[in-house]
Image (cartoon, rainbow, N blue to C red):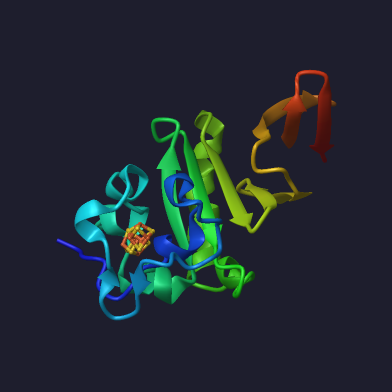
Length: 172
Ligand code: SF4
Ligand code: SF4
């Protein structure tokens, strides 16, 4: 059974609304080497959070988020994997052995899965054969992605929906 150890990356990289903590800022309650100073009273988003490394036997110690410099978690009933990169190491996800494995994970997009790399407010949607960089995206806005038929071929697309009438299409 894995444990967080000295990690604490979720206490930096995630926004925690009840604490008014922004994504990318260390939580004021985090103590290096000692962990959460308010563990028994930490807010519900902290209680409920478990990153993919902690939950998966398939990811070895190199993937512990403080070593990898990014954390991963699933949402939408496992239909979306978010890779949240430490803004202090924005290219960490491109290093090996990470990038090849992330690309391999993206093979599931053919089944409606979505894999999104988040570097501060930049969003990159990963497909097996290309990465679609959406640039800076309002975190409140929704991303949709998948494959569309074009010229008799199936091509990947990713799109930011700021509202139903305002869509920015990024498509190859
Ligand atoms: S990012 Fe994962 S391993 Fe690190 S402290 Fe949070 S839950 Fe634990
Ligand atoms: S309250 Fe504790 S568990 Fe939650 S982000 Fe802060 S240090 Fe981490």
